[in-house]
Image (tube, rainbow over all chains, first blue to last red):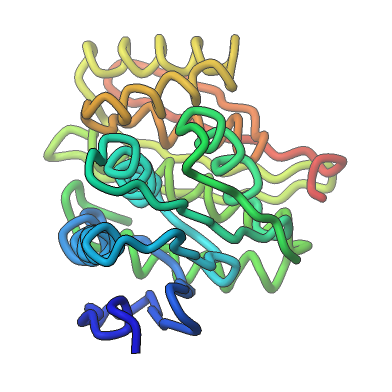
Amino acid sequence: MTNLETLKRPDLPTVKLEFTQANSLKVSGTITSKEPDKSLGAFFRTVHDAAVSSRLPEVRVDLRGLTFVNSSAIRMFIDWAMWLANEQDHRYRLRVVTSPQVTWQRVSFSTLAHLAGEHLIIERTP
Amino acid sequence: MFSPGSSTLESTHSFLAAYTADRLPSAAAQKVSLAAYELLSNAMNYASLSSDVVLEIVQHADRTIVRTANDAIAARISMLREQIDRIRTDSEGAFVQELKRSMKGGHTRAMLGLARIAFEVGLKLDLDAAGQRVRVSAELRRDERR
């Protein structure tokens, strides 16, 4: 069992979180709450911290099943990219798997990847 | 239909996502659903406390319009008009600027939601004000539904 799989996942009404394989997190559902950073954002932070402390080369986040997010949730993904950009100890690759069929992912992540730099990798898979 | 500060946003989104998915092609449903969420969220944030907030989705043969209406103070209406003018002039620039602002640790303002409507899903934003009443609309043309 990897370090990530032992992390406690928050129980959220509209979002499903699964560790599908080593260092791979699948996020599905919708994010519509006004302050998703308090629960989901805090969980992402623990994933980031665990990835750094375990010196993982890569963390894969599969968002293809995440069909809708609000602006606050986009901010959460920006935060994750910034934690990584500002990390001094160990900088892993954050590979985000997106779907070209999901409108918000197609545009937002292309722009975010452009701004975030080389450690954020966007993979498009139908 | 809604009160400012109420917690009806999530349940409204669930209803509208199902409603639009039933009546529009998938891509159009996603676009209209996103516009409805962001417009409603925006309206509930800046509406005057005593104001109702009305959300409408109007389907015409050649277009679908999502519209919110509420009361707001003149300064907020003026700010909203400036934001929408800026987004209409350069939706990508407005979107990127809001992402950059967030990266620098700034607060996510209403602008990101509005910029998403124009840039991310390509709907045309418009604002119409009469006195304290402000209506913000997002229009999806039939030929842009895919």
